[in-house]
Image (tube, rainbow, N blue to C red; front, side):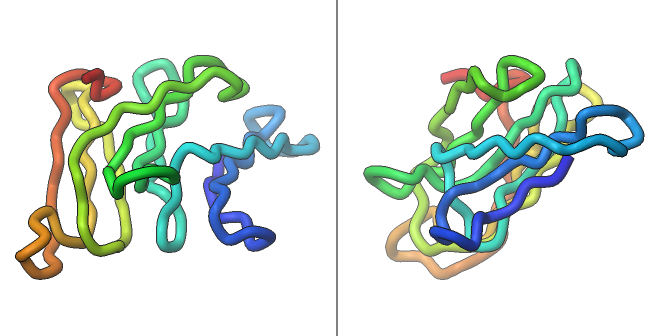
Length: 129
């Protein structure tokens, strides 16, 4: 599984899903327009092997969102707003031993503050509001 920013429009994040464990077949390309990122959103797999993506909300106010795929094809998704953000930076996403996402991002959490690294930890596996 790979996630990348589509160079066609520079905004749509796309998940490349392999059709088998060896990734020997033709992959599927799943656009995820809910979030954007500077290079690519943070990617991790939840306890069921489903993708989680961390990035900035694509529309409206700049907010960090976690998008959770709800099925193997990522056709059903949910987005959880986490934190208002200023500045745009990179994302990294990991799942802790307690199955909760850890999101490392670079930017400003305070409009008056400077850019810095921030670590967010959610209270549950999909950062439900």
